[in-house]
Length: 120
Length: 120
Image (cartoon, each protein chain N blue to C red):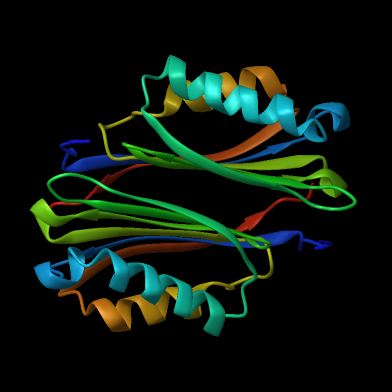
């Protein structure tokens, strides 16, 4: 697979606070929200790996032609970490993030978005 | 597997510039450096996925009990993106990052390290 990366990528790092426990503990739902968001945002999904911890907690990373996305849940704190890096373009990945937020309905979000320059 | 996450995690996002082309294009070497660094830093490795692009480019994500790490190479720019998130403790993951830098010997680095609070 050939993919020419851009010289500027985009990174999103967020913690969603005050998420409904039922949603946090539904691994299938969380995974489908991430995958659906990536498709809507025109990412090319290569592979994914996830893990359900006992008694609770879910973690997922998705490898993309355009880099990666990861989520890690904190059921004990009602929060979810969302991290995404896209090498495709400035601002790319925001649709995936916004779709995730829309579906998870957090009470509060702490988010950091920035462009990353990979060329000198 | 039971893992109690901390209420403060640590995130490292870096671009290593001016890396030797031979190292950037050696996927086995890059993967072994990441894995060795994680072991030295006492991470628990769950699974990993990677992909080699044609004609060049390598991407890897490793799922950890303590979250994840990802690298994406840019052979056309002689640079490598390194991203890590650990839910274990303030500052955790720096040994992995420092080991990666030591082995890749970049001419220049742009790095951002920050603690992430997951508890409200």
